[in-house]
Length: 262
Image 1: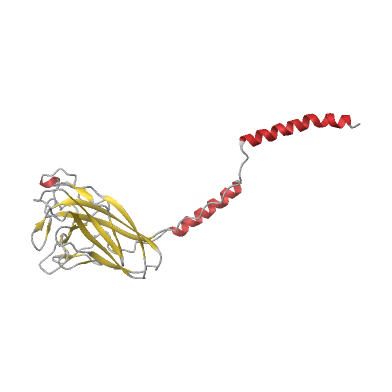
Image 2 (image 1 turned 90 degrees about the vertical axis):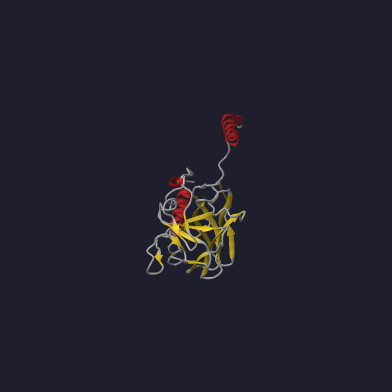
């Protein structure tokens, strides 16, 4: 039994070692690399495609997606084509717990699900067709400063032709939901596929709800570990007691039987 356990522990150890070191296939998934557009812009926060860009990512034309540097969402905000966008937070009178950044730290993306929502996407290479992948990311809900009204919001994620949506976060008026770690499973069909995130809002009323995103990670899913072998059945207590009684009776009567044979 001890030898069996030792052998199985070695199998599990070898299995764990072979699964370590899976790399994140997403480039700039923490949105720390930001490029200013045009010589008259030096922003690290702004509207994607208007005054800033995220290397490796493409924001669909006319979509209202922003990148915020840490700590500016409820202070200086981010300039966009229409106006400056600021979120409700402690710095502008809403004690809603808005944090300077996500648990991943640094910059994060904000997408409007009720105002020209469009995908933020990048091409993922090095996929193994038929293999499963785990997409994980942090998301939160917040509301643009100056607007009120509660709504739900979240993200719809796609890898190739496969699309899944997160649950809808319940964002209160002038509120912030807090960051939540999400995990979605996808199966690759080709070696290169487009990964995209599109914000959604429920209802699509003009409450100016934003879906926040950070820490995007896509890795090959670890295979299911093999089932351990079944150990040999140990005798139960009743069987052991019965066997002990039988052995005792045999030992007691065997000498008498031998004496009667002489």
